Structures are given as C-alpha cells and as structure tokens.
Image (cartoon, rainbow, N blue to C red; front, side):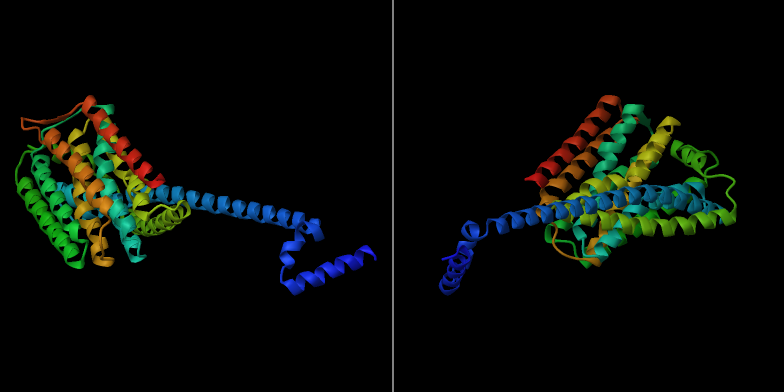
Length: 379
C-alpha cells in the first residue's frame, strides 16, 4: 500500500472520530504547524508595531497639545488684559479677576471637554492635581530660585478664604458630585469675584499704593498693544485654547486606556502638570523680577479658581460618585499643602516667608505624592 493511501485512510478515520485536530500535529503534516507558528509570530509583530505607532502618535499629540495650550493661554491673557485696559478697568481688578481666570483657562477648558465626553475622573484629577502642583511644584521651585518674602494684605485675606473653600469642596465629595454641588461652587465663585471687585474699587480709591501686590500687577500689564492686536490675540488665543484642550484630552484618554490606568490618574499627573505650566512660567518670571507677592498671588488665585470654576464642572456636566482614592488620598494631600501654605504665607507675623528649605520640603512632598500615584497605578 502506498504512503498516500495510508495517509488518506488516516484522514478518513480522523474525520469519523471527530479528532482531526489531534492528528494534524505532527503525524500528518508538520509543515502546517511551522507555517502557522510563523504566521502567529508575524501577526504578533504587526500588532506590536501598530501599538507602538499608536502610542507614539498619542504621546506626540499630548506634547503638542500641552505646548499650544501654554502659548494660547499666554496670548489669550495678553489680549483679554489689553481689551480690559481699553475699557478703563482698574489694573488691580484686572490682575485679581481677568488674569486669575485667564491662567486657569487651560484647566477650565480641559475639564469641561473631559466632562462632556464622560471622563469626569480626568476633570476631577485635573482640578485637584493642578492645586497640588501649584503649591508643591511651583512654589517649591520658585522658593528654590529665590526665597519668597511677602506682606500683601490682599494675599493674607485670600489665604483663609482658600482654606475654607478647600474644606467645603472636600466635604461635598463624600456623597459624590451633583448638579447642586456644582451650582453651590459657582455661587461661591460669584461671591468671591464680587468681593474682589469691591476690594479692588476700595483699594483704587486710595491715592497711594500701599499694597505691593497692586504695584506688581500694574508693572506686569502689557503696554502698547493696539486694539486690533488685542482682539486678534483674544480670538485666536481662545480658538487655540479650545483646539489644544480637545487634543490634550483625546491623547490623555487614549494613553490611559493603553496603559490600563484610570483617567483620574492621568488627570492628577500629566494633565495637571501640563495645565499648570502657565502658572509655573508666570511665577518663575515674577521671582526673577523680585515680584514675590505676584508669584504667590498667582498660586492662590489659580487654586481658588481651580476649585470653584474647574472642580464644579464635573458636577454640572457629568454628575456622579467621586473615587475613594480622591477622598482618602488626593483631597487630604491638597488640604495638607493648602494648610502648609496658610501657615507659611499668612505667617502669623508681619510678613509671610518661604525659604529655600521650606521650598525644598514642598517640592519633595510633590515628588513623593507623584510616586505614590505611580505605585498605585502599577499595582
């Protein structure tokens, strides 16, 4: 009997016994096994290549989004401030409200877009992570460059308000963020802005500038910006902010899904750091010019707006429960750093002071917090 006949009989028997798969490897056709294995290897290689390419695209998109976000925020603030000056708005009022909201524009837009897309965790992480970065990273770095000494009465008035607002937002998180919570935070924002307007008008009535923060704000106002250029910066900056925020959220969510981590973690780390870059640049620039009140004022104002204008958006747009890690890890860290800033900045003396050792401690606290997040994400 020929070899072919023997093989045909084996196949026929295997079909009858429904065990063809057991005889294919390796008794019938060993070459099929090797071809199949080679095909699997090629397929896996192709998938790996596509995955790496996809990740590179997301990383590049994230970096591009962050860069354009910082540039757009700067131009948007310049245009907005110039327009306000054309309408004779007092410089102190511009600095306390328009500039403050302008530096928080990246956080506001990123959180709004993330909430509309159903990524409330990213929005919450962005708000809290930015506040933690503002105190730990930004004030830590600026104090290392030059010790911060300030005696502004305006800052000393804002610090207790920031502490109280932080505690209120924390207690709201225990039963989740709802529409009512978002409305309450917006009402508090309106009250805070009204208080700033009243304070600015009262200070503006004085002939002399007693508060050093007021003079520093005036010195930082853009000069010789034409009305056409101001509106161009405003419109183009706003459009670029929207586009870069959308790109940033898209890339951040994709990276989170690729690594299997929550969008909350991405919001607390990469996105929070990126949206805090305008405050970092502004504070370092202020310290180099020896405008210490302005450096601290940028952080206090930004943190206030992050809580009332940014943290309120998930409740208004995508209400729902808040992750336990936010309540028992992230919020306590933010409250602790805010309390440290209150003690250091308020000073309980004639002036507040943050020296290099204290700045180093703030920076180490931020690095340690990021390490804890990294460990929780890996595990």
